[in-house]
Image (cartoon, rainbow, N blue to C red; front, side, top):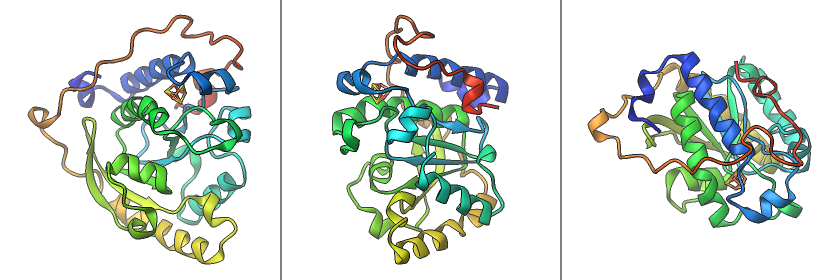
Length: 241
Ligand code: SF4
């Protein structure tokens, strides 16, 4: 990732995001996940979104459809978004892992590590002001700290991710709140604070001198646009607009 990413236009960043998508669709860094997935669930939404959500990993429905949060948890996320006057087309939704762990097992640390660089590249290209982490996995990953969501939910903080300073806002995962009324109530309260956080805008960005050198980009993958055996997904179908 070039350090001049912040100077690129929205359309240049969107095109670069499509290149990351093409790389991701051919990714085999996690051998087991690459062998068992049906699709790479890259993320969906507005490529220039102010608000980005980061969940855990795709489930069966997401793996089938190639889109994040399409099951009941996705329905709840849509409802909460509507309650604060937003639609999915205005936000970007991603996960810490882009491939479904078989049997919905927990992501393994090595798999989270493998996929982390893709997530940072998305953050740098989309340039959100607020990143809302959904549940423990994404909160611990992006904060680089084992403190759990029960202690952190509803407490925003400014963090630098890659070359981007964002307001990180951990909340409960909608899937966890589906069957626990008290957790749902807390999730809703936290969610309803998002507009005031968004109104603050992006935090002050680090100067280029302060931005650490990025990790080297992965070697070019063969068949970047035609991952064998995977359902074809064009960038347009991912709502990158
Ligand atoms: S989870 Fe991420 S790093 Fe692992 S194979 Fe899938 S796309 Fe690649």
